[in-house]
Image (cartoon, rainbow, N blue to C red):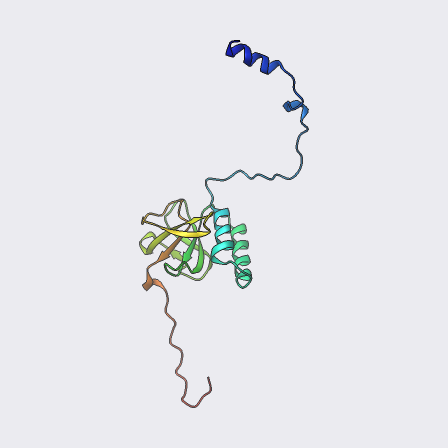
Length: 166
């Protein structure tokens, strides 16, 4: 039997599992097409399983996830305090400019590439961030740190009188 003859036999043979005999699935869509242009779901997982995991962080995490849902941005970035990966804020990356704008949290309102010290990628299987040996922001970056001198230090309060209780 030649290969072309076998193919014709296969096409002409009717089986119970042919596409025409299977009813159309009308239930909820279980599979979601991955969007290569947005890292919304990666950031959602990073916040839920790594940065703001646990009941203690639930209010802050929920507030930030709401901001992500409301935002029309496609690319989100997490600002860490330093290399210990302590969450500080969530930023959006504008496709037109290289400027980052704060969406939620504590940190500078806008960040330019010169302010960035380190960049990180989130690993979903390991549930942790790994530093990328690069200084260039791209769509594959999920988090970053800024130079230490850019963090505002606490403003000195008014000195207390020696006799006042704490």
